[in-house]
Structure formats: structure tokens, C-alpha cells
Image (cartoon, rainbow, N blue to C red; front, top):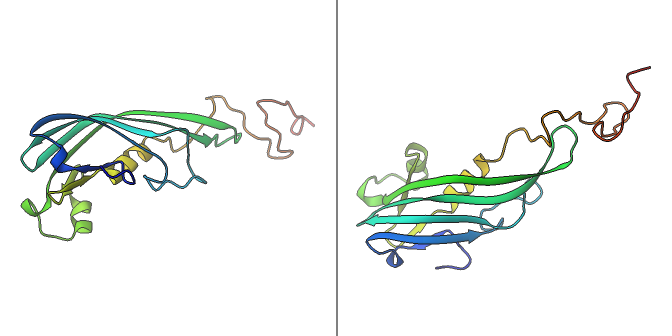
Length: 163
């Protein structure tokens, strides 16, 4: 296992049948920009790998925590990711001879390996990012910032619009 690439699986370490793994990575491993998304701890994939020859199925759970800013008041909001993870993989040459980029666009849900390594990095990254809400709110009834004076209306009652 490559310590620099925690979501890279050496296929010779997967026995035929069922193998359990825990894979732990951080923002650098997933190419996440800390200015846009701040991880609070690792991203963890706990999974069961089912191998039958060159075909592999991974079923498990992807967990992690991140902090984002509320869209209305800019307060930090902790977001917990805890989602099912499932991927099917097979040897690329057995299915298709197109360039990797072209194959990836067409075959959603199928990952290809070279017979030696199975790299789950991009699938873990994408699944983690998909779980982050598009609009982050600290609470459903957040009042946001006053457009005139800029105070957080959840904390301070301004009278900018009562005059």
C-alpha cells in the first residue's frame, strides 16, 4: 500500500472472495483546496472488497467532516458526511480500448484497473464532494447579515429598516 496514495489498492493484496479494508486520507490525497473546503479530520472509506478474477466490487461507507460558511450569515457550519459507497471495477483491456478519459465519461459507476492497482481516489473525492450541500445554512431560519450595516441579524437586532 502506498502511504502517499491511501485510496490506491494493490490488487495482489486482495484475495479471491471477500476482503475488508479501511482507507484513510486527507485533503492533499483528494486534491481538495483548503481555501474552499476545510476538512475537520480524515476522510475514511470502510469497505468490503469482493473479488472474482479481474472483477471487483467495493461496498462500504464513506465518512468525514468539513466546515463551510453559512450562505446567509457566514458563520462556520460543520458538515458530516456519512454515505454509502459502491463501485464496480474491472480490468480496462477486458472491456474497452478507448483512452481512459473517454471511457470515464461514458461508464459512470465503473472503474477500470490495470491489473496491478485499483485507484479509488477520484471516486472517493467525487462522492465526498457530492455530499456537501450546495446551499449551506447554519439553521433553517437564519436571518443572515443586514444588507445596510452588515451585522449578523441572528445576534443583533438592528433598526436599519424600521426607520
